[in-house]
Each structure stands twice: as C-alpha cells, then as structure tokens.
Amino acid sequence: SSSSSSSSSSLATRTLSSTSTSYPRRVTTTRTTSSSSRLYVANDGSQPDAPKTIEEDAALQWQLYTKHHAMVDGEWWGKWETYNYMGDVQSSNVGAVSLQPDSESKSVTHTHRILSSSTSSDCPTCFSSSEVTTLPPIATYTPETLGIRHRCAASGMVVGPSLLKSGAMSTELVLRHGDGRVRVTFQHAPVWERGVEPGSCPPQGLKLFRTMVSKERLRPASPDGIDESIIQGPPSYDEEKSNPPVPGNPRFFRPIPPFKWHAKWSGTSWTWGPQTGDRGWSLSEVDEADAWHGRPMGDATGTWSLRLGGGVLLQCPRVIVGGNAGICRLAWLPEDDGEVGTLEDGNTAKLLRVEASVNALEPIVSEDDDDMMVGFYPPSLGSLRTDVLEKVGELEGQSLEERAKAAEGYVWGGEGGADDDGDDGAASSSVGGGEKSSPAEETVSPMA
Image (tube, rainbow, N blue to C red; front, side, top):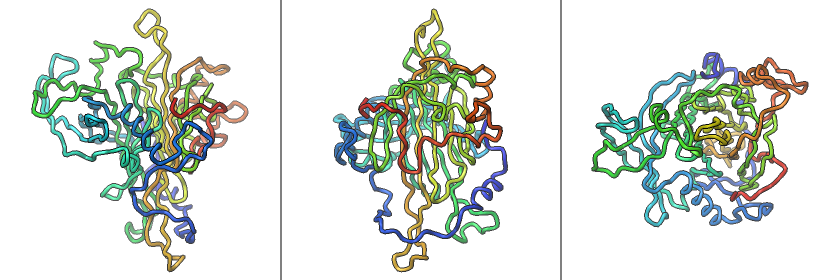
C-alpha cells in the first residue's frame, strides 16, 4: 500500500511553508525556454567509448531505444492501472504501446491501442472476441528528435519531465527485462500553500496527484483490419501458471517476501549527467548506502512510495519545489532464484533499478527588473541511472527479523541499529540535483 499516511493538504502546507516565495536574481548563464532542447552535453573525455558529439550521442540513444523498446512487429500489452495520491486504484484499462520502426529503422511511430471490449476465452492468453481501438499516432521519432523527451541508459529509459496541456508535469520511467517491461508515469500538479488562493500567484510547488503503472508483455503486433481475436493481451496469472516464463523473462504473478530485496547484488550501472555525459560502472557489490530498494519508505522526508505485487517498488517526491531536485525511482525484481529440479534450476535472482532527478519551477527573471519573475523554465532532467544487477549471495550478519524490519522502512544507523524515525542516519540519495557520485570504483564502457 501507499506510504502516504497524512492528509494531502497538511502535507502540502508542511512541505511548502519552508520554501521562500522570493526568486533568485538573474544569473549570466544563458538557457533556452523551449522544451525542445536536447538532453545532451558533450562528454568531458574521461570515458573514451562514450559519445563525444551530438551526432554520436543521438546514434547511441537510437541504438538503445530500438534495441530495448521499439520492436519490429511487436507491441507492449499491459493493464494500465491509475493510482491516486493515497495509493488506491482509480481506474484500469487494457492497452498496448506500439513503437514500430520503419523498414530501414530510421524512424519509429508511436501509437496506443486500447481494448474497447472483449469476451472470455478458454485460451489463457487470447480473447475469443475483442474490439481494439487504435488511437491516432502520438509521435514519430527519429535519431535527431528522440532526445527531446527521451533518455535511455542500458535497458532503462526516462520520458520527460514534460508539461501536459493541463499544466501538470509528467515523468515516465521504464525498465525492460526479456519479453517484459514495467512502465510507470508520475504526474505532479501545481499546488499552493494553505491560505493562498490558487492562481493568485505562481505555483509554489508541484504535488503528486496521479501515478500510472503498467506491467507489460511483448506480443506480436496485429495489423489493422484483421481478426482481433488473435490479440493475446496483457500478462495474466493463468498464462504464467500454464506456461511458466523461461529464464531470462519476468514473472509478474508471484509472491515476493519483503526480505527478498535484501541480498548481495552485483552487476553494472549506467549513469548520465549533463556535465559528465554517459558513464559505465561495474558494481562488485551494492553497499548499504546505495541499497535504496531495501528501504521502501524512501531515504528523504516527503517521499511517496508504493510497493506492488510481482516485485515492483515506486518512489517519488510528494511535492517538488523550485531549487530542489526531485528523485523518481523504480525498482523491479523480475526473476527469483531457480528451484532445484525445475526449468529455472541454476538461475539467479535479478534486480533492475532506474532513477532520475528532475528539476522544475526554476524562475525566469526579467532582464529589465531583477526582482520580477516573468515565468518558469520548462522542467528538465538532472541525471539518470540504470542498474542491472544479479544476486550473488545473502547478506551476512543479519537475521530474517532484522531484514524484515529493514523492509518495513527502517534505515540502519552507524551502530547497526534501526533509526525509528526513518530519517536520522539515512543514506543520502544516489542521484543528486545534477551530477551523481560514482556508484563503484571500477569503470567500464557505457556500451556494456
């Protein structure tokens, strides 16, 4: 369930009351006010294999996008569930994200297909009769335009942050593993302090009001005009029971005890920052300070979190204010350790994580009057990190009871005890306001 435990109004007041409504004086740095600026800054040369020009960066991003997300003759079918601020399901729809490259893979057309109606079938994965509505294309991406809103890092991706027509800000995180994906969209809307008439002054914060989650399976694309009954739809419990996924593909319908998150994890990390560019890291072991996936309530005061079945953990700021980067996170356990004597015998558990820092409500100061604000810069991406990890052992020196306590949100202090307030002694976020610290000592190529 959601970690939100207080009323939304009191939360907004408590968070925003300490934020000054005055705005900084004009600085000499030149920034564009267009939301079409690319998410790229040239590499500083410390990574020989990383992109050094805008063209190289665009080519790498296009390669990652078409490898992990845009699939020829494939669609990502899932159940799109919308949660409110309290963590309750508001609505759900069955739909598909279709990202179809052209014959030469020089462009990708993005469309959505919605299951309008269906009747049941004896087939665990097919509809006996269904009606699918294909919406008009959302966009067509090319290597030159993909970076306007998308940023890829290994199998992870962030879309946004971007402004919607309603005035809300949308930030989407995506992780892919085998033939499955988890896609999460956080939406924050303008908010004012208690006692301030909404709209009487510029927004004083952006408060989370809606989260969409979709657990998706890659299905064969069905051309328009053919019998829609062949559509398999989203992943289901019956499908996984009758036809268990092979190692390398995720299982969405299985119990995940909280202590499963607490283990020794090893793998690789891909990081991106506007000053450092793309970097690759080898993680021999994720240390305690960086193991935010084991602290579901988050590391900072004001973190909204939601833990879902199938090993999915979400974290994001309840309220984003100007001058402070907001950290949005998605962690996923797509596979467990294989059981002896089964098809998965010898397989090891997998952990995927993606986190992005977003900046919003940065004021634009008038060139004629340093004390006058004329608007806000568009929200921007501060950093991105994707971790692809594999279980290499159990944690030493912790009992199951201690691991269970940690899974409930306790953060271990310097003496090894639990801090009851969940804040003192907590590790700082691994993604900062702009650049992030290196997650490991050993550096590898970001192409790994």
